[in-house]
Image 1 (cartoon, rainbow, N blue to C red):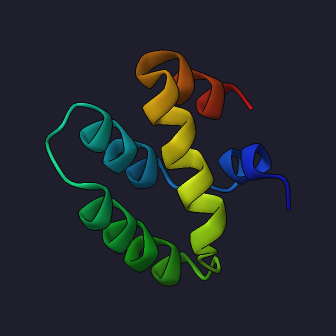
Image 2: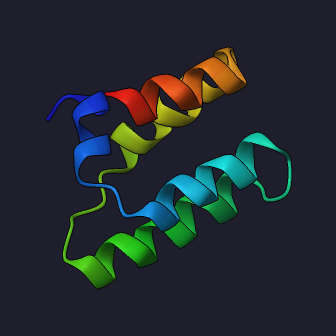
Length: 72
């Protein structure tokens, strides 16, 4: 699955956690752990490599990166 196509399946809470990470409110490890739990609850498999790619996009350009993930 393409990294950005994940946004079609993400619960709103996953985006909220990515925003918290982007704003420095939680660590990347905390964000990934919480996203893993949220996805598990919804029955969506967690692929760590895909999520790390999303974190990298946010690191490279925080606001634009998160907006591009949401828009995909």
